[in-house]
Amino acid sequence: MNTYILTSLALQQYLAFSNLGSEDLVSLIHPVLVVIFVFPMVGIVSNFAWQTRQRRLAAKQDKNKIPALVGREHVKFGRWLAASVVVASLIALAYSITYKSFIKKGLWTKNNPQAILIILIFVATIASLVLLLRARPKLWRGIFATLTGIGLVVLGQQDGVWRLPDEWYWSHYYLGIAVSLLMIFSLAIIDDIYRSITIRNLHIALNCLALLLFIGQGLTGTRDLLEIPPVGKKQPKKAAVEW
Ligand code: HEM
Ligand code: HEM
Image 1 (cartoon, rainbow, N blue to C red):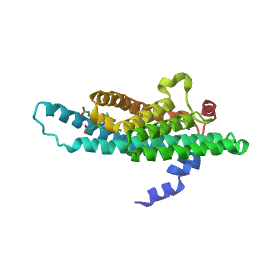
Image 2 (cartoon, rainbow, N blue to C red; image 1 turned 90 degrees about the horizontal axis):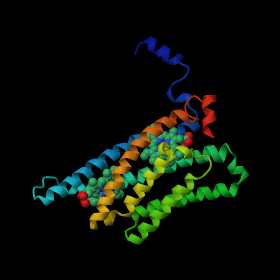
Image 3 (cartoon, helix red, strand yellow; image 1 turned 90 degrees about the vertical axis):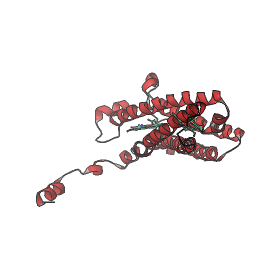
Image 4 (cartoon, protein in one colour; image 1 turned 180 degrees about the vertical axis):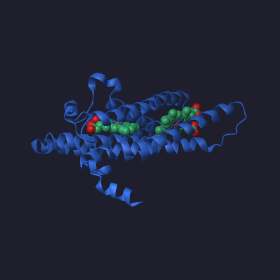
């Protein structure tokens, strides 16, 4: 590297992350998790889903070249995908509630019991997700799936969450919660997908919808990064959009 480049780097006022505050950095955690982990996982799960389907169809005609393990791999990565989508939503909600409600609107000092209750709901939702991933009996899967779903919905109703209620069809919040609930549902019915053709077809239909919702999350998420402060250089005009 020559001296010219070194001097211009040293004189630069803002370098990459130095322009962002800690709040901005925290707001980037779930988009980063989604881009690096969740979206590639969607590709892997869809690829195995396609092969599982092709294998089943080929099996009927007795000319199967696709290995039997594709189904197992689909479920293994599917479980990771489902869990990470729910975790991404929880991180996003935790960011919004902590900064916009606890800190900016002073909920922590004004109504401490409510703030503590919100934290307990977070803990209960994470615990339900872990138990859902571990549970085998149908009844417990149903119970933990319902609890995880309720937790997400209740947390989403808290102050500070940007919901865009009048335009729900392109609200990042509504699409995000919908896709998280679909993932939770897939986890709850894993065993039934093997046993019943109706449930299997329902699984395929719902998860094709989930694929569309993932695309929607990519679109609305990048839009929100530009629209909702505080992200990047805070502009006074944009601040009006926030509340
Ligand atoms: C991107 C989302 C997903 C799509 C598009 C998708 C689609 C599919 C398709 C097309 C099949 C094959 C059905 C057949 O053989 O006729 C399948 C099977 C299955 N899926 Fe998914 N799926 C998705 C996510 C998940 C998730 C998150 C789970 C569970 C956590 C899951 C669990 C299963 C199970 C247990 C099977 C049966 C596997 C087998 O027959 O060996 N899927 N899925
Ligand atoms: C599976 C994918 C994703 C899910 C499930 C998801 C989920 C969520 C949820 C539940 C919220 C809370 C709503 C709120 O407080 O405003 C949120 C907020 C947000 N998400 Fe995502 N998200 C996903 C992908 C992305 C991506 C790819 C980006 C950007 C590249 C992104 C950027 C944002 C932004 C900027 C906010 C608003 C934060 C704020 O209120 O200041 N998200 N997301």
